[in-house]
Structures are given as C-alpha cells and as structure tokens.
Length: 398
Image (cartoon, rainbow, N blue to C red; front, side, top):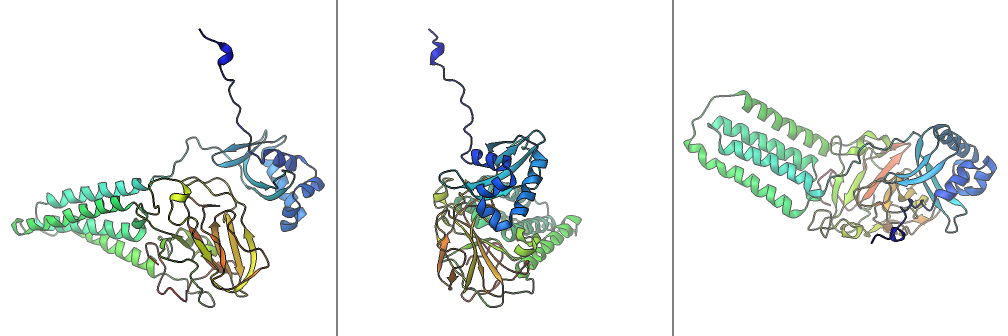
C-alpha cells in the first residue's frame, strides 16, 4: 500500500557557501562593501572596487541571487547574470578574494565536455587505418608513394602539434603498430607498375613539406627578447612540454605577456596519469615540488583557491594559486599550484632552489600542470635555463 508520507520532499539546490556573503556584499552601500572586503578594497582601491560592483549590478539589475553551476558561482538579477568567484573567512564574515566577470553570462545550451584522453588517439588511429588501406590497395608505385607521403605528413603534424606522449601508452602503441603495418606494404612495390606523375602525389608531397616547415618553424621560434640571465629549472625529474614554442605549438603565443610560456606535465603509464582514473591524485604531476627559478622578491602569492576537477573549468582567478617573483629585471610567474602548498608570502626574498609550493590544478587548468613564464613591461620573454639547454617546444621531454 502506498504511503505518501514515505516520499521525500524534492530537495532544493544547496546554495554555495559563499552565496550569503556575496549577496550581502553586492547589496551593501559602498562603505559596507569596504567593511566586508577590506583586503580587496586595499588591493585594488575602494573606488575601483565600487566601479566594478556598479558595472556588475548594471548587467544583473537588483535584487541579486547567487547560485552554483558547473561554470562557477552565478550572480543573477532581473536583467541578466554574471560569473563570480569569492573566497571568505572561515566565519563567513569577510571576503578575502573576489572576482566578478566583466561580461554577461549565458549558460551553454549543451554542456561541452572535454574529451577523454583516448578520444584523440582514436581519431589518429582511424586516420592511420585509412592511410594503411590506401597503401595496401595502391594500383601503382606512384599511388603508393602518394599514400606514404600523406601518412608521413599526418604523423609529422601529430608528433609536432599533438603532444602524443600525453596519451595512454597502450593507445600510442596501437597507432605505432598500425603505422608499421603501412610500411610493410612496401613488399608489394616490385610487382606494381611504375605509374605516372599525378596530382595526388604532388599534393601529398606539398602537404608533407608544409607540415615539416610548420613544425620546424614552431620548434625553432624565439621572440628575440630573452630573460636577462638564465633561470634554474623549477621542477625535479623528467617533465613533458605540452605548450611551448611558437605558433601553432603554443596557445599562449597570442597573449603578449604569456607568449613564451611553458605548460609542463609529468608522464606515467597512462599518459599524464599513473593510474587510469580521473582523480587529481591519479596525475603524475600532482603534488610534485616547485622550486624558485631565480633570486628575487615575492610580489604576489595565493594558496587558498580550490583545485579544479580534471576536465572541468569553473570560473576562478586565471592563475589560481601562484607565486610571482620580481627579480629586479623581470617578473617570473609560476601558476596552478596546489591549494595549501604555497610556502612563501608577498615580501619574502627567495633564492634559486627554494621551495615555493606544489603542482596543482587551480585556476584556468583542466589537469595538473605547472604554468611558467617571465615577462618584462607586459611582454613575454624567451626562457633560458642553467640546467636545461636547447629550445623548449611542445612535445619535448626535459
């Protein structure tokens, strides 16, 4: 018999812990906002903080509510929504960190999921199989050479632009075996007619030359503005560059201050992971020590920003937990550190090799890695190291 009292009432979404203090902050008067977020007011100036708040309220209207979403905290009013990030004191009475997005927020119509590590390798395997079929069914030597040139161009592009070592070892081996199967088709050549020069061969050779040029140019690229003196590489052991070099090997190249930046991961049996799971501790880089690359004064440090879940990006400060060091000639930035691991504070003097923190996944990051760059007057500088030689490009092991 049905008992209506046994049915649980539909549960309401649990508001994020920062919701209450953020609503109080946005609805307070200017003096009240300074009392709620005194550190923020001191860091950016009370007038600038008020200007940002008024811009936010102009986009949302009032009254406002704060809800949680996969994209982060959402401030919503009658006119629209914006994304926000806030950090509060343990008692919930003060805001110690605040970020309000400067544009309106529209929730995506369909949630974009970042691909699993195997997805990219599956695509590579399918393209490789297609090329293998072309080689084994080639009607003459010219067609076979055209197919081989096309396969070579594809692998040059994959190796140069795709950072394949990020992918699980088993999947990489499957692609390599398939490629060897393609080369085995060469035994057919003595029995094939010569054929005639064709457009297919010309196109394949042109594409191969273009791929070699593109990858070589990206790997050899430098901005001709190096750091004033070589730095100490900040990580111990073997690391893999997933972003580095020039366009198109480095997505930082379009951002002036980050144009020569490096993103560094560690490798394990499952690509960048030591186990097949998707937890932070499954990643080989997570929790590894990060040391100071130079002598200087710490001008900014953060350690309270939560790690992102792998494969997701909530709205947070861009660099997450970080340490910025002023050498007197340039600013050196190390970012995406593990929360609670940062061992220095603004004003501290550091020497090369001093412990700064640990690799994490905070800020604009989809998996644990270290972001590292140097800049002068807002312009990124080519990195040089005392203990690592040569160019630093995507796909290089250090």
